[in-house]
Length: 165
Image (cartoon, rainbow, N blue to C red; front, side, top):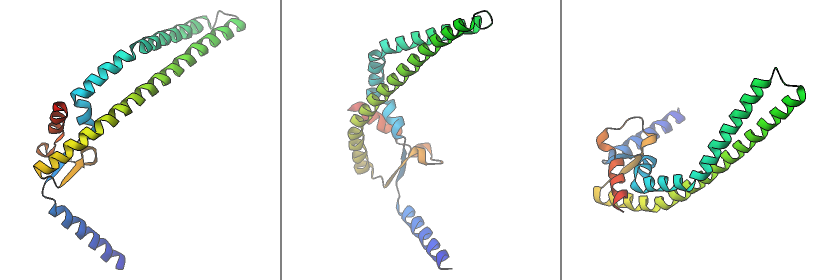
């Protein structure tokens, strides 16, 4: 019975504090940052920076596919020693493809983390300004909400303000 009273009290407290929050909005933080002009420029710069490595990766993928196809085509015709050699060639090329792919993915992720780290202070300034000027009581992460009216989504406004910086 005591547990029920505590749960009811917590529920009432939560409901009353929500009732006090008059201006509740939602924000898709990642969506806002990725839709900004800075993110688009960063993405283009990243693609250009990694274009050679990406081309090499595509070439390795083609080599691995060709080695696999050659192995499959000769499976019934080649001697066990030749099959062993073909399998070894395929495994070598495929391992190199996987290694370089992971390496490129890690570099890409590291650069994205640096970019997001650079954008966070800008986003914080914008949010503080919006809280002050618009009088928001609560800003919820869009990903954590089940439903929100489009009118309470401030993501487009944040994108616009990010683009003005």
